[in-house]
Length: 65
Image (tube, rainbow, N blue to C red; front, top):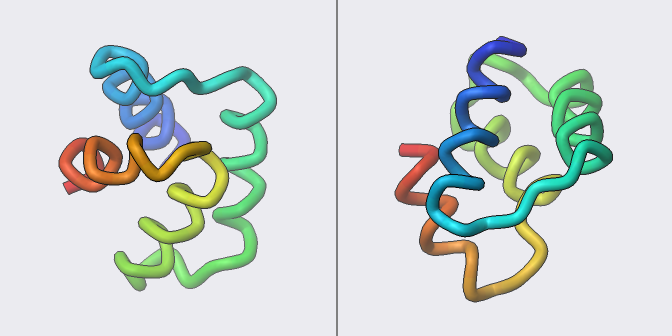
């Protein structure tokens, strides 16, 4: 799962969504609190940790999917 998060963050940065090291760590920690087989929970947890503005939500959804 950690490699998947790293890949997601790399792709988010590639499309212009800034993700700090702290946010990266927050995303990994957030996954400790969700059911990893529930895709919607994982997506929401990572969005909350990685996306800071409404303008970036659409790009996040595309990259995640």
